Length: 359
Image (tube, rainbow, N blue to C red):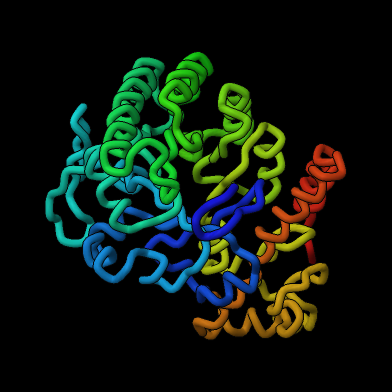
């Protein structure tokens, strides 16, 4: 996938930098780990520090000193999580800020206006993300509204930048339809007719079982253009990622590696390590004996556990560094498996290894 700020090898995992920062990581460290793209959140940056301030400071890349690719979401997932603070109409979503209670209206046009000011490489059209479980009728109405918002987003995009975005910005549409295969297929076909630069599968990281996520993804992916990126939003667990790739997904994002790190959960090649456990108090081994990251080359499990038990910030920093490395390294191994035609075998072996107790 080619962007104005460099190529992105796919399948790719995007670390999440909610407020223009991947928690616990410097941009330099992310570059050293090989991150080629990460996600920033429109909702949070709109409310603080404000999109116009970021525009005046040269856009997100300059503001946060990040020379590689950035994808911004539309902000809608955060808005829809504010169940008691928002109202949805065909015009858009009216919501109250979680910071100061101020009222805002997020429309497809406004979401694009904010993202254009931020200046990412890839922007997302506004969609209606609904809860799970949801009825077929609820899912149908949300998919129809999402399609209408997608048309408006595309019209606004071309009005501002011309067809093709002037080769400076890409706009992705988002497939909705809940957990109903027919609605998902219809949403995908209608979005493809609008000719977006890429396509996302949304609304599948909201509590449904992994098997259902795979089923819906398998329904949608074959209908999306093979030459354009396919993005499954908000996933996933390491052992699940090859399943999504096997179903045609190119890009994924998730807060799991960073959030888990802050809660002392370490991903390793043989399963999760809950580093606060007493059995690691005198463990001189690295976090993962099969890992080549800077943390595993230098620090012991005993030391990282000590940091968490003492409330030292460095514990979360080291755990985050390792977890991000783990995810990016996993994607490299998946790409290697694809090249050699053994992704299915890799996926089965990975799931078995990650189910083990690492001791």
